[in-house]
Image 1 (cartoon, rainbow, N blue to C red):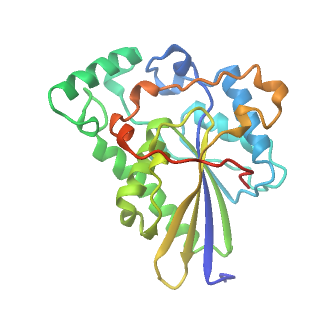
Image 2 (image 1 turned 180 degrees about the vertical axis):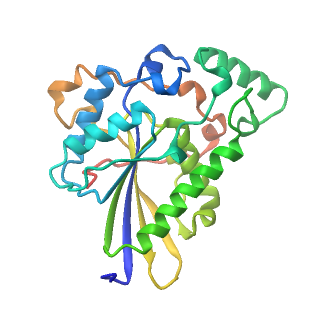
Length: 270
């Protein structure tokens, strides 16, 4: 039987560690794009940062770079008993099948050409690739299902790890800021800073209060873009071997440059 009137869901939305495609700045076949040694080091640092979080559920996109990131994070945990990572296709990276094997610069060229023709960033459709609507539908489907599942949980607290990708996580935050009701959320505190692309192993900590009686779900971003583990507060002796580059910055949403900047105060994430 449920043990409390509300369930507190704390969601850690993580971008995977550095992978071969990040280094090459190219769109590689996703099942042939593993973590680099640097990416594994980044994931280990994040795992140590979150070692005291007792994760009750763990999900990862079924691509190697995300699944290995999640595995390394859980291996560092001192509190988590759940060691099973559920592969989840709905939080895969945006599908650019028609551009696999091409450079990031080529993708930028195509995108800028479409924008010069009058399309917005969100309207740009690449050849033989997933549409924005398709991406949004699967993101909403997964995370709204997660909220519903946690509502029925016997636990009063759920700590969930979800390791995904830069563009997918960015789209999640844009959707939460603009269409929270589609996730079954009645009260959402907007955070525009969270819409910027994440660097490798950066995470957002999002807290949901889920009433069991059918009242409105409320949620907010507790920590956007947390990355102190890479910036030097955790295992600084390893930091010199960890690159700190903003991969995929070429896909930043130019509309966000107009957003009012927000100050983020970093502190212990757990």
